[in-house]
Length: 203
Image (tube, rainbow, N blue to C red; front, top):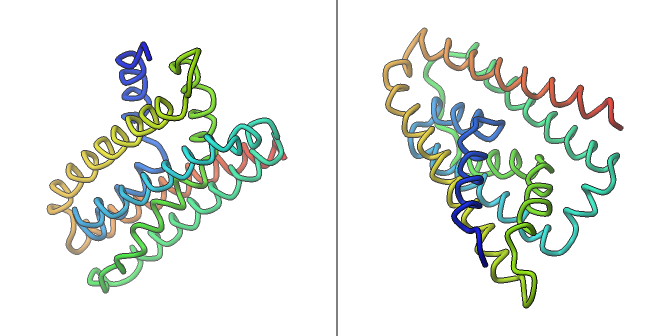
C-alpha cells in the first residue's frame, strides 16, 4: 500500500477541525474534568470503529447512496446535539454544585454523537479506497487506515479535553461555570439546529 503518509496527513487535517464531537467533549470536560474528556473521547472513537465496520460491510455505502436515509440519520444526530445543548443550558440554570455525571453517560454521549454522523461512513467509503492496493485483499489495509483515523481522532479530542480541563479549573466554580455551561449549551444547540434544518430540507 502506497500513500499512507499522505493519507495520515489528510486524516490529521480532518480530525483537528472542531466538530460536533469536539463540542460534546468540551462540554463534558467542563462538567466532569479530564476523566470525562477521556470517557467521552473513548465513546466517540467507539462510534468511529462502528462506522468503520459498517463501511467494510457495505452498509455505509448504501446509506450514502440513499439521500433520504442519509438525511434522516443526519437529522437524528442533529436532534441529539440539540438535546445535549438543552441539557447543558438546564445545568447552567441549576446550582453550581451538582452530582457528578454517571460514568456511562460520558461514553454514551460520545458514541451517540459519532454514530449520529453518517458523514463518518462516507469518509471511510469514499476516501479509504483511494489508498488501498489495486490487487489482493483490502481488508487488512482498510483496517489499518481506519485505525489511523481513529487514533488521530482520539489524540485530537483528548488534546482538546486536556486543554479545556486545564483552563476549566479557572471557570469551574460559581458564576463562571454557569457562563461556560451556557456557552457550550448554546453552541451545541446552534450547531444541532443548523444541521437539523439542512437535513430536514433534504428529506
